[in-house]
Amino acid sequence: MIVENVKQRKATRIILTAFLVVVSVIVMFPIYFMIIASLKDPSNLFKDGLKMVFDFSNLTGENYIYTLTGEDYVYLHWYWNSLVIMLLSTTVSLIFSAIGGYGLAAYDFKLKKPLFMLVMVVMVFPLEIMLLPLYKMIIQMGLMNTKLGSVLPFLMAPTAIFFFRQYISGISSDFIDAGRVDGCTEIGIFAKIIVPQLSPAIGAMTILLALRNWNAFLWPLIVFNSEKSFTLPVGLSSLLSTYGDNYELLIPGSVLALVPLVIIFLFNQRQFIEGLSSGGVKG
Image (cartoon, rainbow, N blue to C red; front, side):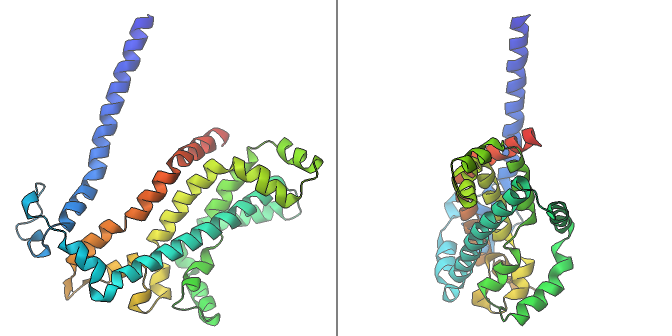
């Protein structure tokens, strides 16, 4: 009986592994196609239609050289703008959201439930509903075509506040009480006791917020009005027009745009998995 169970588990593991390998290949194929296409001469990319098999002898790196050096280094301007906005917005959102989630989870005050309900309501509203008031606010503040204008409306992330609130609710209040007994300030309790225990949650939200900020398109499209101030999604979309498509910049630029996200995920993947699994157990 035990031997049969072992064989069943082994067979299940093999089938599951094979299934995941197939899914991984399917998911990775578009990325493989994009990388190979970025190394081909754009004039021949669609000449005979899209082919699944590539002639590796005709691959060249000239497209990447043109992307990084051509057009007055405009692509590097887009890249830098996206990096600054992503790092600033993600960092500040993590700090404010963690503090907000901690306040909603650890303290009892009169407006606690209404504030939490407000967070839930804002999570439901799509960005399109808030575009007009946000746009008027940024104009009145004189922040059009500035990085601060792109970042300011999203410094508080309702999803992150909710996530941190749920995660901190699963942490025993004994830690907080012990800190107060030892004479630790409220800020010290949060910084020295709570934050170290938030490592999985911070890792998970770092990936999710960085992905959101890096891929943001609609709001940067409205805020920025000069070519060199564009972010990557806005800049790359501007390469597609009715007068022609700049594939020698578009395709390599799209490949290079994946690099920061891959780096962020590699540095936070363990915390990301722990955060999601912990949230599932505590939820």
